[in-house]
Image (tube, rainbow, N blue to C red; front, side):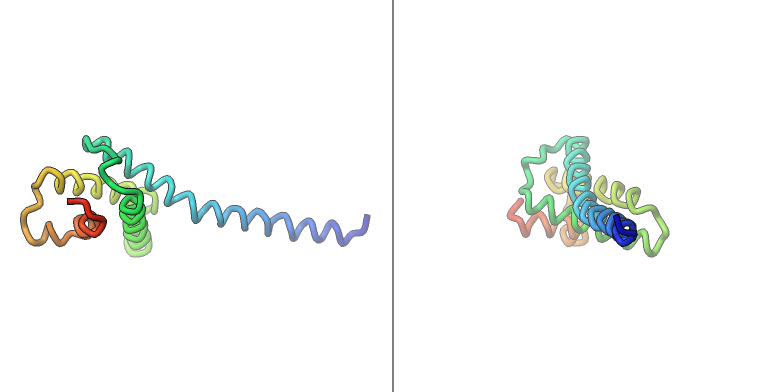
Length: 121
């Protein structure tokens, strides 16, 4: 066996590892974030079936963007900021369904606008 195979192995194995890790890293937060949002909705007394899959995806994507901004600006851990924002999103959905969002500021909330955009009244 040539020494080239050993060098190629030292290069290929880490490259393959980082490729797989980056693929998992891009898919995992969205999947786990959506699952956490569904659990947070259940804690608020809501069924996940009240929202469509695209609506859940968009709400999760927005929460991920906010968590990323919180991480960069405030130095907060990403996972903590994401969970807090998803809990707040679930609480906002609950208030929206209960009819407690009356003022213009509440109706202009990004969560409420997302729900309306997906036909959830």
